[in-house]
Amino acid sequence: MLKDKIAIITGGTRGIGFEIAKVYLENKAKVIILGSRKESVEKALGELKKAGFKAEGFWPNLGIYKEIEKMVQTVIKKHGRIDILVNNAGIAAKDPIEETTAEDFEKIFDLNIQAIFRTTKAVVPIMKEQGEGVILNTSSMVSLYGQPSGVGYPASKFAVNGLTKSLARELAPVGIRVNAVAPGIIRTDMMKSVPEEVIAPLVKTIPLGRIGEPRDVANAFLFLASDMASYVTGEILSVDGAARS
Ligand code: NAD
Image 1 (tube, rainbow, N blue to C red):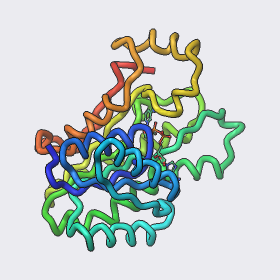
Image 2 (cartoon, rainbow, N blue to C red):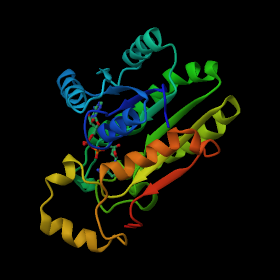
Image 3 (cartoon, helix red, strand yellow):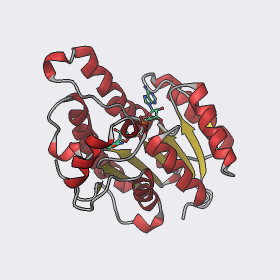
């Protein structure tokens, strides 16, 4: 579905981003994963190699526009184009507002939304010149309903939806589609540390009766990146088993 497409995936070293990398590679894309540290990127590339895939990786600081620009230029020098940008890196928050500092709030926004602005800004001129491109963002179920604590996280994901819908309108005339996926509760490293007695009651609230797997989410990213979604833009696609909390 993605033969020879050049795809950059932020937060591609583990969890949902790593699974997106795998599903894109299975569908014959050329994949560049980004992570926050050299070691985690190299570890992920090693795991992909063991699974029979060849990918590339970089670790630009997503807080610094110049580092992102440099990474984009390196990709262009080698591949000549960028077809897909997946803005997936994100951090969560769970503290009540009294225990959340202004710095905590800013840190979440800096990665969950400002970094999306930076990577997108760096890639848009290239996609414009190509006359086509796909930008996909990882939102969250809480971008629709909020969450009872850790306000920075849902607030940043509401912003992700706003950016997605607005950029979809701005960039549609030049052939760039922009969509987001809003996962529910997904079994990533974060969830692995949650005890079974906490997970069981949660599962009861999910109509599909189970927690989502990274592959459930990655498949939505595959569809949206592919020509199967050629008339889909500005969409926030829920992948949450109809969980609504
Ligand atoms: P994860 O913690 O397993 O992976 C997060 C990824 O982001 C890692 O690859 C990490 O390298 C990267 N990252 C973290 N901090 C970074 C930084 N400062 N700079 C660059 N990269 C950084 O989490 P995940 O569950 O796979 O989450 C991926 C995305 O999915 C996030 O945007 C998250 O908000 C969203 N999401 C997750 C769930 C869930 O239940 N797991 C639900 C809804 C949305």
